[in-house]
Image (tube, rainbow, N blue to C red; front, side):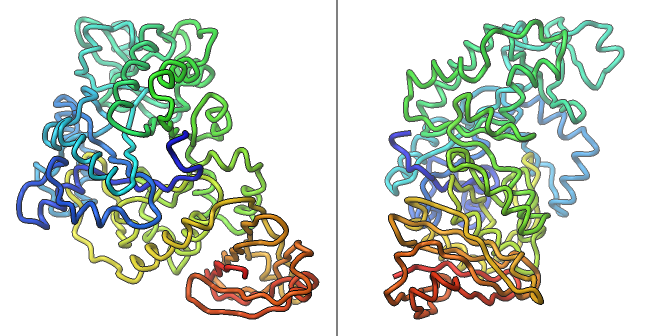
Length: 489
């Protein structure tokens, strides 16, 4: 990771609908090869370190045909785009036929041009890899069927939704153990030696085109989960885990390539130990979206070595839009938390504008929605102020209250510090009501001096005596979902 910051901020762009939007805005077709410099300047907001161009690889014609025929998908498409047209359905970016940039998006040359534009603006490029499955018409299904989970005609007859035939063989549809099979993909076999070699080769090739790789559903290929999912169909588990074996080859070729795991089921620590630089913090997302301050506080009690290698988010292409699911200011409070905690951060295209409609990844066009200009200004200010804040030491802070006022329990607080005094203190009222409390500042060196506390969110300045801060804590009185991000001088 020597070429990356320790806590990078990544911005996900849903490539196809984003390019459609740029094309409509400019009144001409636009691919990655010819996005105007002014558009890249808009993307390169201060405080970002990398852009994830989600969904650039060649999509499957067979997968597209299945998507058009699937009634459940059709309903989801029409819900997302009430004026849906046939050409809006372009197939899933996770039904990959080849790891070559789709020509309709600009091909390899277009991606190279986009990467150069990002690099000129100090931004790194992240791309996808899908280890668990391929498109049903991927050349490997015929040329290397041993890479796939194979069954028998009896399996197909007993479970036609779970299996399909190609090249005279019965191959499983991809799935995870908790949901029905995905009808448009073919399941790879994590235990097949040839697949491990092919995966390493594919990732080395992807690594030549980018600076980081986000691995889809990475936990599915740990030995234990894969064996429990596929049982006898997978064959005996190898002596070595999948990811460490792959990374040994990949990092020999690309030592600075950052690997990001989409991770669920509390598998983050395991995947960190197996070599991933960052893992999705889905647990924090769930708590910020649906639970209370105490649940968030308990989650943040984990060690710094673990937290530094999580990637925090409020939405991505798989999750509902934050503006729709976190109303009344909860989204802003959660965003301040995500932006000021240790670890990496992931923001999503449209999140800053307050988009509310979640777009299925099969679609090439966003629904028309007005931008929330106030929210956009908030996010850009937050990005800029958080960039220099997250360095040095970090610790949670306690907040105390009074017997007749328990609202302090909804106050979250932490500090970034160097040496014997804090540099920044973050205080968030994670509740739908006003909250008061005293945030403990356990730095004796604050005493004996006067301190200027500047709230970077709104510019307000407070003068405080150091002895009072040490003895009584920092008194806060915050409105519902209100926050301070304070510089201590």
